[in-house]
Each structure stands twice: as C-alpha cells, then as structure tokens.
Image 1 (cartoon, rainbow, N blue to C red):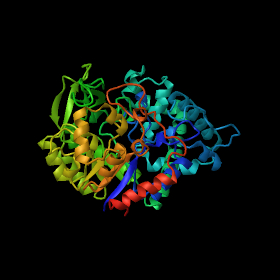
Image 2 (cartoon, rainbow, N blue to C red):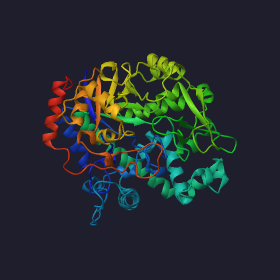
Image 3 (tube, helix red, strand yellow):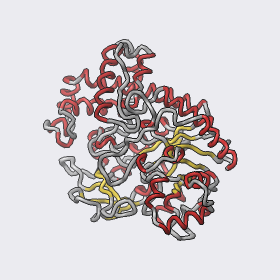
Image 4 (tube, rainbow, N blue to C red):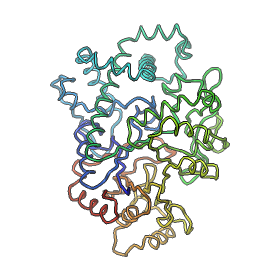
Length: 491
C-alpha cells in the first residue's frame, strides 16, 4: 500500500508546558494527520535525553523521557493535585531545556508524593512486567542523582560503579525512595504513551519511531551490561563509534558511543539485541533502525582520538543477527536508515533483510543520472524524504545549495518558474515510486533554516525547534489530503 506521513518529534509540538508532550496537542496532531490522509507519524527516539538533550544520547534505550509527560493530563486524572499553574512561559519557537527540566522534575516529584501510594498496585504490576530493564535504570538514575549527575564512569564509589553485589544492595536500600520515584515516573510515561498510541491507531495513524543503533556511554545500558561493549577491565571504552569525514563534516563525526562486543553478543544468541528490538516493536508500529549500515560494517575510532579522522572500518554481525530477528520477531516492522557509506556488504545485508531503505531528495541533485535519491530511481520498497531531522529545511537547503544543484533540481523536478520550490519537492516526494513518503513538518510549513532540528557535528542549539500553536490548520490538512489523493497515497 502506498502511504504517507509527517516527521514531527514530540518535543516540537506546541504546549504551554515549555516543550511538546503526550497531551492534548499530541492528540490534535494525530487528528490533523488523519484529516490530511496521512497514515504515518514519525518521531525521534522517545528515551530520556542525556548529553546536550540529544535523543540519540539517552540514559536508557528502554525508558521513556519524563520531559514528555503531560502535567495537565496528570491533573485531570487526579494524579497531580495542585492549584499551582502548570504553564511555563517562554519562547514558543524554541525549547528552554534547563527551565523545562526543573519545571517537570518539580511537578513529577509532587505527583509521586501525592499519588505514589494510591497507584502502588498498578505501579507494582508495571514494575514486574518491565523488570528486565527497569530495575537497573531506576537504580542508575537514583545513584546518578546521588552523585550530582556526573557520568557513571566518574562515580567516586568504585563498588557501585563496578556493580559489586554488596554495593548494589547498599545503594538500593539507601536510595529506596528515589528508586521507587523513578519507577513511578516511568509508569506515568508509558501510561500516557500507550494512550496516545491507541488514540492514533484508532484514527488509522501508525506511530513510526526511531531506534539509535548505539547507546550512550553515560547510560544504564552501558553500566548494567558492560560485557556487550568494547570496554577494558576498568569498564572504560577502548574504541568508540562515529562516521568518517562526509557531506556533514570534514573531520567526520566522533559520536563517542561505546562500540559493541559483537563476538560476545553472538555467543549469547544476541539476547540483549533481541530484547531491545522486541521492546521497540511494542512501543512503535514501525521502527527506523538508525545507522543500519553499522550492522554490516561499523566505523571504529580509538577512544582517545579527538576527531573521527583516524578510525577504521570493522565487520558487524551481518546476517547472523537478523536471521534470529526473522525467526524470533517475525512481526517486527523495520525501516533501515541506510544513508552514508553504503558498500556491497551493506547492500547484501539489506537485500537479505528486505527492509525498506531511505531516499532523501536533498541528496539527489549531484548531476549523476543514476543517483539513487533521484525520484526516477527510487525503489518501491523504500521511504522517500524531502529531508530528515539531520538535514536543513528545504528552504534553508535551497538558500545554501550550489547554483549547479539548483539547475539539476529544477530540471529533474520539472519546476515551473512561478512554482514554490517546497511545493515542487513535496509533490516529487508524494509522486515517488517509493511505497512510503515522509515529509518533515518544517517543510510542510515552508519554514526557513531557523527551524532546523539538528546540525550533525555541532553542539548547542539543536533539538529546540517548536511548531507554533495553530500551525496545523484544517486548510493545510485539506491541501495535503488532495496531494495524497493525487499521488495514490490516500489509502
């Protein structure tokens, strides 16, 4: 079936709480998608954000982001009983993360104090169902708070850092209240998440989520599972992840995530990975596996290197992992983010898995008639984007691209002189042979570079863009619905 969708992360939704949330505005956007004839809502990772508030540097791959919990919903359900204003005045165009973090933490702690005991039975059930990750995560966050937020690599108590049995028991007892509060907050997140997902699904809208291939160094995943990473005996990274110099950065990208010990993972039947994928399949209808090429071959950088220039390519697990995914998770719906250094080994793995890959119109206009991102070359089993969260907005890209790229784009898309370039790109994406077409909301709204979500290889100023209240109008929904009908994507 041909279908379409919009990429808009939850943090970008308008909300009086300083950041997009799982509340009324999220349901309104799902309704907007339904009216527009869109069957897909793509979001970024929903895990707790860590370094620089990046969704790709999370404290846990399994947990939910407390900043997305809607306080007004808690109040309407009687979980939060306060007469204080829940609104957080600020810039409606950009998130103020320090203010939002303090604001949400205060009211979530209040909700725990007011309703923790009353909801104890439901929380206990949730805790039992998610014990395989929740116990470690809750303790990790409590200990992290105890040590003023520093990375677990720097915790002054070597016993808890190395997970010695006596130290684990001592901290669980000493920080019992903080651990239980973390469990309660996760219960609240997933209660709201699955309510929103059910609302969207009933409208015929699938939630398309993102799963980073790597986890953050400062995460419960790395602390609780040291054997699955390339750590030394002191549990510090030997080699780290990134990508070589490319379109985005002349020094490459030094991500800093610990690399996997694929030999150990293979000996354990890839149990941790299968558990992770199963969890993603539960929270999302479709899962985009970020940096899929890393399963075929991954870029390995010595941990002490300041840039990504001196890394080397190593072979990943390849078919041995995905043979088990096929056998044990047959209903898992995966989209492979296959952008970057795609070689024959990557192509063979993609062919074996038969997962849809990605095409990006902003990469199409190199002058090469065989460029795989050109609409005429799109594979049916793929997802076409005008741009991703890592790209500039269309208008921003158009303002910065070379004159030759503009000429090639105008010719390839047969753009009329009086036609809006964003309309031409949207039309090209929707009429692509690709089964799925996804457009960032910034491009739907024809926004300039200032609305860009992320600029890879930079620190600060990312992940902040927010959509203005009232931007997703009924008129816009009608325009998109007509485009869906014209391109055979209405369903």
